[in-house]
Length: 153
Length: 141
Image (cartoon, rainbow over all chains, first blue to last red; front, side):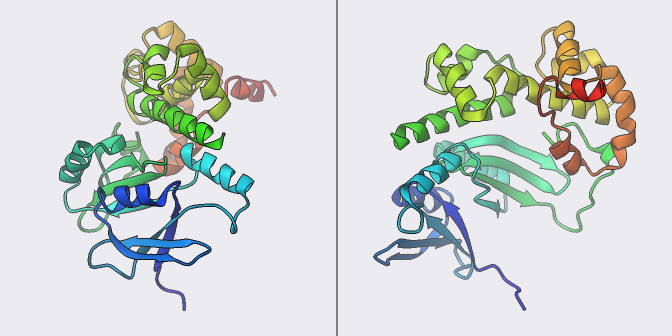
């Protein structure tokens, strides 16, 4: 029975720049950096979680012809290639401040919601990510009529 | 060639993010063009080529979507909501809202009471107005 995600993937335009961001700023650590000849297999994980890896994949030949890779790069830079990850932290306000100081590009400040407090950001290439502190205990989805004004900004 | 497109996309995305984030503030083309590192004339043309609509229209859709939300979920007056979402004139707000949504704000609010049974995340995704005029032509069917 399938029961665990071990790898997810995000398209990046430059793998070294991706390492600078995901490892140097977000706090991932390098899991595998292997030159397979046909590709550079590059994965990262959060400390203590080597079994949950994020693959930093650069689109291009031979997997994709150059024209297709170009389309993928265009979608990534338009922010339309899907979400890289949703990340949990202990204190989203603290993490937000630290990342702002490092020049990380935020699309949304930490905002309190019924499921916790979270914020939005982009990696250097345009991929969206979210970082948040989930609410402890059971989450109650609010009655749509009682959602506060900031809940779905 | 493609590198230039990617760089341009990334700059345009920054300007679009600014509209999503700061819709309630007075955002003019000069400010947005500065965020995107291009001239004003160039900005409007390239933004449209990148995202399929002018920056002005994108910002209006964002503001109207927020207004729809506030009309549905709060008891604030139409005038307050108009200024809450970044419009500076009630006339422009009312006209733009009606153009996009197909109904004036007060009518929308009244009708929206039926929508309260739908989870908010679906409302957010599915009530964002898709274009100018579309709702109106549907109404005339």
